[in-house]
Length: 132
Image (spheres, rainbow, N blue to C red):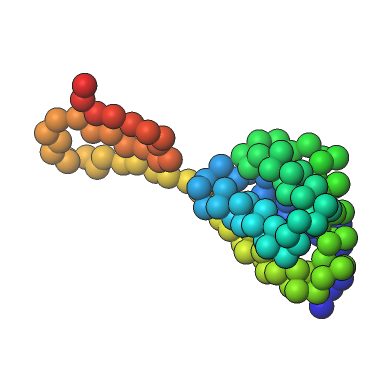
């Protein structure tokens, strides 16, 4: 097994933070915070990590210094607790494999289609109301 490094953790965090805007991504990010809290309840360093993680918002351009600091703290915690290290590796694997690029959506109304009324096509549309 490769050693857990700050750069490996930072790579996953950067990719994840910079691109994640989908609900699954937010859930996965919340999972990291929960993972740290569960492994180190009341631990000062763990609280610092969770606070740092909560300041980094998925879907926004990450502050590189904050990502590096958070990665270093996570690696430090992992070195002190092999169970946490295993859980962090698992989280990294899941976070790294999460499809976060949003994909491509193509909406097409084929020639000859009969449409009665309005047509709405879209993807990842927030709260929407039809009518009054």
